[in-house]
Amino acid sequence: MNGDLEKIKAWANQLGFDDCRIASAKRASHADDFDEWLAEGKNGEMKWLERNPARRADPREVLEGCQSVICLAINYYAGESPFPEGHPEDYRIARYSWNNDYHDLVEKRLAEFDAKLKTIGGMQRYYVDTGPVLERDFATDAGLGWNGKSTVQIHRKIGTWFFLAELLTTLDLVPDQPFGDHCGKCTRCMDACPTQAITAPHKMDARKCISYLTIENKGPIPEEYRRAIGDRIYGCDECLTVCPWNRFAKESNEIAFQAREEIFNHRLRDFLGLDVEDFRRVFAKSPIKRIKRERFLRNVCVALGNTGGEGDLPALEKAAEDPDPLISEHAQWAISEIGVRGA
Image (cartoon, rainbow, N blue to C red):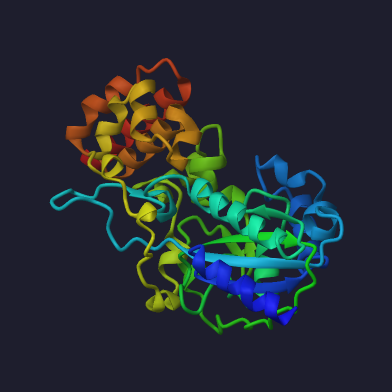
């Protein structure tokens, strides 16, 4: 099986993964913490996480005969700024969303990996953050980084800028050794969180997280968090950005992760002029498309309320008349906020 292990890691490298390590299939080490987190309702509207938590906690419940978890990392770091030269850079989008949806790219590679593993007798299920697997537990077990105080996985060579993926397999592979927790006394991620969503080391209340509020949350953004959102219009990278392990990060070789010009050649207020068809065109194949125009313009209004000025008022006044109450209410809030700053 050692020969197979070397072959498996070589395949991972050939398919463009930046790291590949093995964990034994077992009940996840933080399964009890996950159950407690669900019981406290900290998953908010993400109700799919409540479906069959026992299955999510143990890959042997997902794949009959599962013996190992092949844990993979793929670097998506695309540099510091996505904007063209001369742009005022008046909004922020989470770095993983600068181009097309990563699921499409990574799942294609996982399918190829699955086909290769079948040639040596393995049966697999594979996922890139879409399946019932507590993936960070198994990545940590395998030594593919460790889970930071922000609950984000950290890799000693990539920092925080990578996607996790995994193949559950019936192959009995020799597991790798854990790397250990190397956060030490650092609390930069906790201190930097704009909404104090990291309530304690390794404890996250998703209902307060800007990524949750701007993406998963389908309704109004609670007023108590709007100012903290600042100029962010999709997700938040703050706890990732401040991590000191990013000093080792290098730009990804994958061109598909480079910023897409059509997304970043707009001014913030320009987005309010997008009708449904424009929105679909600009964000075609982007993960942003899945929140649809209404939630996206809701986010844009909040950002303009925090950073906008008189020049943004015409666009906001038009948005305040939008038939969708999610857009109109947030536009009215933004107009009020600009008025307060201008008084």
